[in-house]
Image 1 (cartoon, one colour):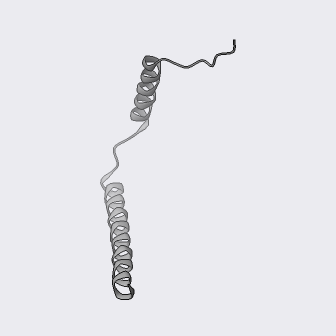
Image 2 (cartoon, rainbow, N blue to C red):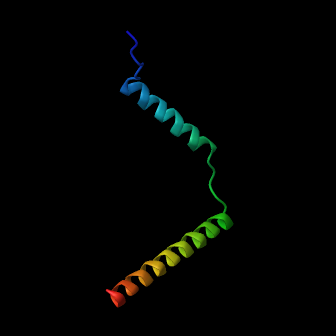
Image 3 (spheres, helix red, strand yellow):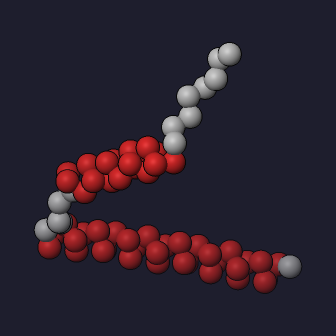
Length: 64
């Protein structure tokens, strides 16, 4: 019989925790300049998406 090896829940959880810990070790706290840049880019993206959604909603109400 050829059964596929299926890892147990405990081994999958352990592997997930090891991968999470690896990511946490290589991350670093952003500098204030990096943080401000990220906030500006995120804010601009939210504004643009909001304006697009608003325009689509207004067009929908205007034509339908």
